[in-house]
Image (cartoon, rainbow, N blue to C red; front, top):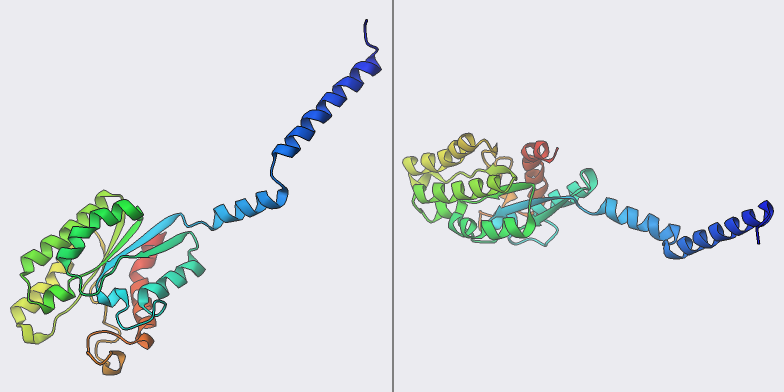
Length: 226
C-alpha cells in the first residue's frame, strides 16, 4: 500500500526525532562539556625542569619560599601553560645531577631545563675537569631530548686559590658558549655582598632574598618560554 506524501513526511520526521533524541542522551550535558574544555585549557602543556642543589631546593625555607617555588607561582600568572618540576637536592654535586638527569628527562619530558649545580663541587675542591664533564653531560642529554637549557653559574670564595676559582667560573661560561645554552653567570649576584641576605651559615639565602633571585633568573629564563 503506497503512502501519501503527508504520511511519508510524518514518518521521516518521526525517525529524525528519534535519532536526535538518542544523540542527546549520548552527549554529555553542556555544563560538562564546558568544564572539560576549561580543564583541557588549564592543563599545563610544557614542563620546566630544575636540576639544582640546596640553593634551588630552598634549604632552610618553607616549600613556597624558595626562588623556584616563586618562579612556579609567577609562571601560573604569566605563562599558565607551564608547570615547574623542582628536582633539586640539597648537597647535590654535578656528579649526582649527571647520574639523575636521564631519568628525570624521561619522567618529566621538559621543554626547558635549568641546571644550577657546581657549588658543592667547588666547596669540596673537586677536580675542575670532573665538574666540567658532568655539566656537559647534563647539557648534551637535555638538548638531545629536545629541551632548551639555561645554565646557571656559580663563583667560589678566593681562599680556594686564584687558579681554581677562575677555572671554576670559566667552566660555566665556556660550556654555555660551546653548546649554545642560555646563561646566567652567577645566581647570587643580586645579594652576594649583603650579609643580611643569608642564613646563619652564610651560604644559603634567607626567604626575603628569594624574590631577588627569582627576578634575576627570570631575565634569562623568560626568553626560553616563548
